[in-house]
Image (cartoon, rainbow over all chains, first blue to last red; front, side, top):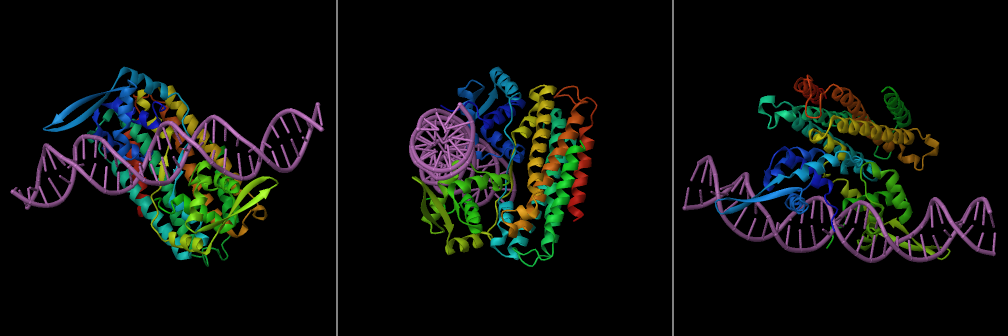
Length: 210
Length: 210
DNA sequence: CTCACTTACTGCACGCTGCACCATCGACGA
DNA sequence: TCGTCGATGGTGCAGCGTGCAGTAAGTGAG
């Protein structure tokens, strides 16, 4: 028996709370917005709504475009109630998965050039993501699909942009730092311990300084 | 046929490159370090090394503690070569999964109190993680398990701490901001659009300013 | 009319998780 | 000496989730 609903189910329910969508629209919307903090493959979005319907949290309506069928999902009152309740339950912790960081962690198994290429790639990825997020942020309020949700979008985009900026700044700093190393396993005269102590002190101060 | 090896397989191979480990030690080590950027359940670490052995990238040695058997894994030359080659392949993009952010995104389906509790929870989680990371960072160099890898640890801890600090600062700012809202769906007189435009401009400037 | 792109899905192998379950070892106190 | 508790060292299984291949119809540009 599946655990009705999963977090992904609630994510879909949240979208349905805004308005009804076809499965395809749900999938696209997922890529455009939820993708940044709840990435799920398109494949998932063809099974999950069926479970919401089975649980009575949504209803499906079969429609047609010419001969081609399509399914439109809408939230039910039970669905709205479930969504509201879910917002009070404890959230799972934040998860970061990064192959790039993993490669940095094992950099001493390879060459300095490999490490530098990885850092360049991380900087480029951060810039790409910042460009995309800034593009979303610069959408004039009149063009927003759901202007009544603009304040929430503003809140979130600031978080996402700040996270990416932290990665970007780090990548540039790291690139400059490793440029002075003698190899991936040999930092030359760079004093990592002192730098790290300063970082830790800065972090402790930020925590206190709240 | 499995795709030998998966990224998790290379992660294990990277650990074996440092020294041989028992499965149990691999699992614990995974929780302590890789967990921050390549989280995998302990369960996985009992199957994955077997595949490395099957592929000839590692060897297993059965040992005994009294009657209880245990398996010690070590990397092979083929394993070292595979790891080196992997470091040159393109990395998958960074993935962030956060139920907390998801709940903020759908905050207008609930109450202002629910949103505020979520933000408090995010701040607390960030502080927890910063404490843990700062604790690692403050380990005196003499106590490091692998002092020859200290420069890499210093690089990484700075990234992880900077990311968490960005979340912490945002959570505090967001908490102050929503305190003036009239409801989760009603920002009162708060001008999110202007704030967002400023954030976007700041981000664009940071990208250029490299 | 053709071709490329979008819309709208299904099947399947495999990665991965969480939980339940099993068993031994070592240290500690009653 | 016995009980028991935490660390060690695993396996089985249901179910979530991904990526890719495959199928098919609508739509617009040239």
